[in-house]
Each structure stands twice: as C-alpha cells, then as structure tokens.
Length: 206
Image (cartoon, rainbow, N blue to C red; front, side, top):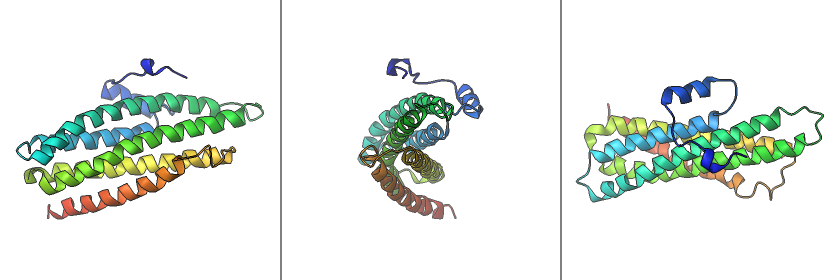
C-alpha cells in the first residue's frame, strides 16, 4: 500500500486526463466522479463569491474551499486504491491468494469511492443555499454546478455498487461490508435532492 505521504495533492489537468485515458484503471471511474464533484464545488465557490453580501452565502464560501481540497486529496487517494485493485484482478485465476486479494481490494475500492460520495453529499446543502440566495445572474453557472454534482454522485454510486457486487462475488460477508451498503441509499437520496435543485435552476433559464 502506498503511504499517504506519497499521494500527490495536485497535478496538471492535461496530465491527469492523459492518465485517465490510459488502460490502467488508475485513475478510473471513481476518481473521475470525484473530479466532477470538485468541479461542482469550484463553480459553487464562484457563485458564492459573487454573493458576498449575504451572510448565509458567506458561510457557504468558507466551507466550499476545504471541501474542494478534501475532494482533490480523495481523488488522488482513489487512484492509488485503483492501482491495487487492478493488481489484484490481474492475478492468475489459479493463484490461491487471488480470491482474498480481490475481495479485500474491492472492499478498499468501495470504501474509497464511498468517501468521495460522502464528501459530495455535503455539497447538496450548499447547492440548496445558493439556489435560494445566490446571485441570480449566475443561475446558469449554479445550474452547471448542480449538473456536475448530480453526475459526480451518480458516478460514485455506480462505482460503489460495482465494487460491492465484486466483493460479494468473492466472499465478502455483511460484516465486511458494514456501512458500505447503506452508503448506496444515501447517495441515491442525495441525487434525488440535487435533481430537484437542477430542475428548479433550469426552469429559471426559460
């Protein structure tokens, strides 16, 4: 396992996208979902920055920067986890250690993407605040942020479900999946809430 101190906290966007395009899976879909969540947080920060006169929005601004930084760290960490996941899946089927290695790697991957999802869920309240109190001239930017948030949450949910499915197929017991199965429902509820916000914002543009 790579030490957390070795995880980069940033890299040029073109380099990251190039890495994403390679057939390595590190980074993969989970990390890409985290980037979409980061885009949502950044756009919300921009909208909040144009609404500094509102105390509630000013508080939101103070929360968004740390969330964006946390997402970036979680994205990079997820890439490390994905590399370990890929290594486990690459083991020969006859390898006696493969079953356990794949199961543990799938659970690690599930926990990693669940972390991204939990961070993303914290953005739902910020989106709601900005939808009701944000600068109306930036409604389209907030709408794009909401779309990115919904996409990021959806991606996290899909990855979480896939990882849990693989973990179950390789013998993960309910106790091993403790807390992770419940994250699926929380992500689904968050997506529903964001979908309503997106629809409301979209209606303002007609």
